[in-house]
Length: 288
Image (cartoon, rainbow, N blue to C red):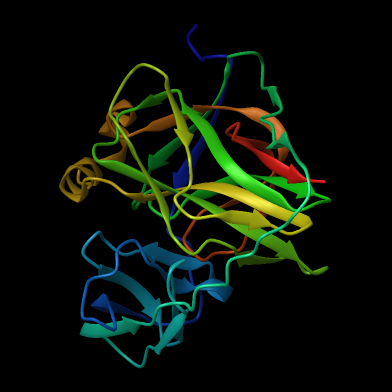
């Protein structure tokens, strides 16, 4: 069935920073061993400004003179004060200390932590990620789940309706939502990456995390974020006048579901409430 009844499109538009001169900042991100760190979120959260570094740790953005933050699930967050244009910045990230293994005794039962919700207009509700003035990298959407008992994540599922973005790479993230001001605190120690092949046919993904993900009782945000694509293809696409672009050549689409959700339109930007999601599913073991 073609998804034509309802279409919600995310067009990534550069968010203006009023009253502040912006400068170009370029560089690379490495770890303490001198190795490139892939897909680091780079930005100024309070200004809703962000991007994601390349697979070889290169980053570039225009920003006002302020403090850039660098976030990756496997490393401690670092910062860099922008004082003017720079094209040779080197950021060194230091690995997080691994949390001690936790073993919980007692019985367990298989359970869904997260279900997709109700489809929007049957198969007719589709969310599309399309670049307008920049890359779709950093766009993140997900659903809220709650557990009253310790929960071991074993299987994460999501579906893609169609994809025409070449070399599309996404990450799956899990955050704990803490406090009345809803701070999103990362709980992963290893990134979860998934390559989305170009296809006009639906694709289903089942992910079994490499690390042990044991969630304490609380509220969680499980999300899907675009982290990479073919930059050459993207730049060629963006060079075409906007009214002449064929967005079907650079689009990722998913079925829409009604579910309490959040979305952010740039890396490290503010999470915003959203009434729909892409139908993620999380299964595992609940400790009794």
